Length: 275
Image (cartoon, rainbow, N blue to C red; front, side, top):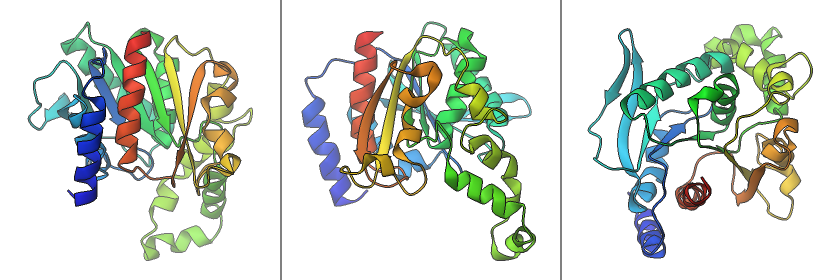
């Protein structure tokens, strides 16, 4: 842990010392495309959440025998967990895996509140789960830099994958370009014949919805970050959620950063206060 990160955590612990406890029991952290569960810890977000009272609940992974818990979870009424996902797979495949994790949590703690936090494509995965399984009773969804209206970058990657250039991709360590073609289609800008065109017009369950919109320049929020335009990240631009979401601008590029830990803790506290 760097000296800067330690200082951030120390300041944040003082700032939150008098804050009320969040009511939600479990936060599920969902990585984006080519991300890993470890990114929530390596980025510095996990220790900041821990400093705010959210204990590390360990990691969930899928095995032939079902969901397995990895790592020693700290006893706590408030915790966060990370999960394994095949991030190159289509959104629907990832949502099925996420559903298994949510069911596992619910089976062991039937009364607890569950909040989903998705970075980038992980936010779309979480939203598809909520729409498909409203009975899961998810209390809230926080998306960070998620392509809720799709991404031109995904369209470009999909186009390149349809050209002869894709034949050479594995030789340059870019095999993911070919493996991710279905995912790129799912994350292309919404239109009637793709996933987002359908998802964004389906009834969304009652829950707290928060979109963290990442922008490289706060004076130009429409530009967003290098991967997704600002309006495409905003849940309020989703037809089914117009006027139902909170939008928060966050300066930086597309990846996770320590400040997201402080921002998440604040958001979780507000969700607890309104549910």
